[in-house]
Length: 259
Ligand code: 3PY
Ligand code: MG
Image (cartoon, rainbow, N blue to C red; front, side, top):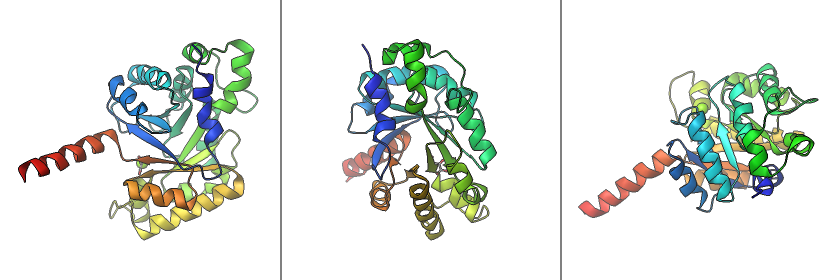
């Protein structure tokens, strides 16, 4: 069965302040990814940076998520751009690359995301061909438009290079990591994604994205923060993580039960 439209829906729906919500999954069992895909999220992100996912669990997760009718995003570990091509070959709809601090970083990332002439992605979409029901030149001609490249902005250097990153060919969106950014902006004094200087940076990022016609994404530590980001015009927000949702759900129920 072909799932081309499912995978392509992420690229098609992002932009113009679309306010999409993604689940954020670090637990590597594909049952968790599949379960969250069946909730009312627009997409599901599998986290290989701080989550426990490896290439095998990502492959299994992508299949479950796609069969549930949702596109998959994968956050790769810092600097490991070769994994970006691999997860696209496994059927991911997009990749989030952490700590993109310069145009050089952005170009290196994009080169693994897009086929020539934009990048240098190597051919071999074995699983993606099966999932999309497209092969050869049909996959080749739709691959670049389908694979959403998302560069994370989470340092002072990245904020300074924001325009250069946004105009890099093959970069479709940026994603603010507000926790790392709060550490960077306070020179390591504290981690507080809700701080005023982080909020100001978030306003700046979405404004520059609009200027360059690129999408703005952000990790929202709370559901209220996600609502506020959508109002600012953000295109995609993560609301918490599977680990956090499990912990807060357990704590809330224990509190009620203990009275
Ligand atoms: C950050 O806030 O630094 C993130 O990377 C969110 O996952
Ligand atoms: Mg981060």
